Length: 139
Image (cartoon, rainbow, N blue to C red):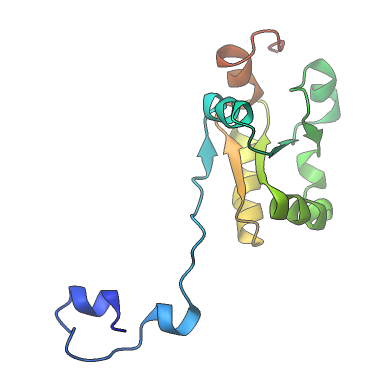
């Protein structure tokens, strides 16, 4: 097998070591860092098993929540890494906060820890309240 990169550069006559030969090709698709609330709802409606992780503070969670979401405050994420890794082995983690900034930081951190199956819900619970479920109170 010739390296696809080598072929692109006109070296197809020679066998070259390809990163795919050395490491093996990754078959898993890399998920975008962010996902819209509408896409989350569509995936839930389609029956895809998603794990909703609410990283807001307990007082925020007391004000409003998305049904079925698990509260893991941002400061507690590092100590629950093994639990989150196990959940990500089963399905995609959808991480959200109030407006989507904290959750984006958490998804970045999780990916740096090797948890690839996680996404931040863009706009957080506030966007969810506006575009998916207006019965979820805004604050």
